[in-house]
Image (cartoon, rainbow, N blue to C red):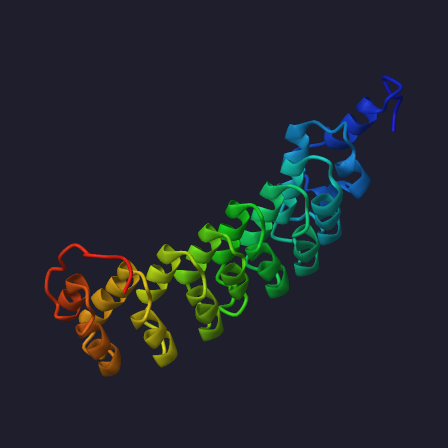
Length: 247
């Protein structure tokens, strides 16, 4: 390169990114060191990261090593970002980076499972909404002990084992959400019919009262419930206000 205008290399870096804008990073011979250099202006940095021709090896270095979390997010969202990079970025200290990883369709299932239990609810919510997240992985939500995350588990795809875990929680709202599911098996129905909280049994009765294929044993149990609101819901009538909490 020509003479550098100062001692800290700002002009030299500027020369690297001062080429014609239409020239891609690959054509310009941009290196990872160029893009990772902290002296690059934000405009030049994001223009280069947005370049679809940016090689995967550079995307990986930016995603895992760049000091600016906005650059790491942009790299994670780049079309060249691979599964191994996404798995590594899932442990980033920045929640926006982890959220970007949780939303990415190529994030590996194991990484999504870990993100489901993330302490940041936004990250966990993004992972729960990822189509690649399996019902088995969502068990992590049920086991979290966090009411928000358990509610996410209760209202989304979940295995029978995950439902069992939720039915053992002391959170009545979570159990009521489980009662509204349409994939409950006999064991789940029996436990819900015996739940000590009227609102939980009422949620189940309202759901079963609208389902002509509902389990007859559960319907009979609820039809004999001591609370009139539960009995009315099973009969498909307007439910009066629950009269009590404990059976």
